[in-house]
Length: 216
Ligand code: DC
Image (tube, rainbow, N blue to C red; front, side, top):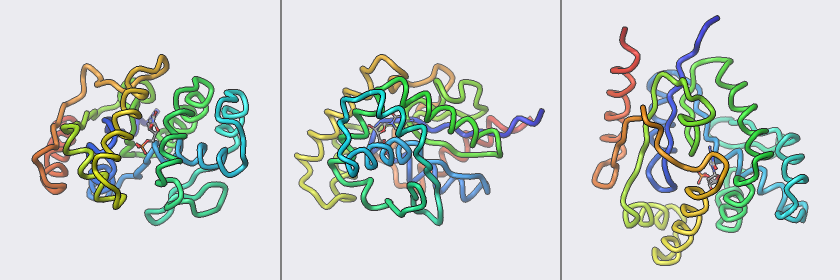
């Protein structure tokens, strides 16, 4: 059986995961998978359809039926472009809620494993190195100070930094304290603090880890 190389990148929001994962995937010629976009797409669908986010079973059903694909840097939900919509603050909040449901996570995990089995990939999220691919060859845990993370997100969203910091802290707490697959560093993941680094420096640091873990 061929074991494809999986580069698992986990960390909290605003730590720089998406930027570095996309760049590293391009450099290596691997598929890039943003698993947060998968949870966001499920939440987006529920909000659009007016489905109660507290209805765990309906959320699991949506997660099983959602067809999320990545195309030219964008995200498609059941064939429709949702790239911008899934970044809206109310979708971020809803995504963090639905991501706590074990049934939703099970559906996402199965899909992520299926993608990983089909070829080498750089996959970023919260539980890739701990739960989805515990045997991944390369594991990186990206982190940054709360201030640096809020500052980055505020620039991305064009929103006041104080408000972004509050929202981010709330979601972080939920992601870190949920019972199912909470955000945590895998014991064998390399820790990288991106607070004072440029995206290029983070990319080089991650590529160095990849080279170190894939040689021999
Ligand atoms: O990385 P992001 O901000 O796009 O993630 C959106 C939400 O989904 C966030 O609250 C964390 C959750 N998530 C998760 O629980 N597990 C993952 N593998 C990826 C994201």
